[in-house]
Length: 95
Image (tube, helix red, strand yellow):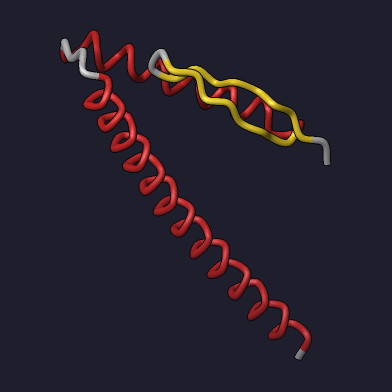
């Protein structure tokens, strides 16, 4: 798979990286979203220190990821239970 050399600007610093062509849009979108969150926190809390802002964004992103992971676990468990129930119904109908 072909890799691209790109630069992503986060908090006024450029970060060169190599990404797969298929991941380029996702990586650029992630950089844009990080910068938007930085701007939101800067405006909302009046914080100018970039390290503090980046820490807040990292914390916020991790909380969101943990919530999404928990939601996926609930969905996985529900699907597992429904498949087991369907298997039970199918096995009973065969008898």
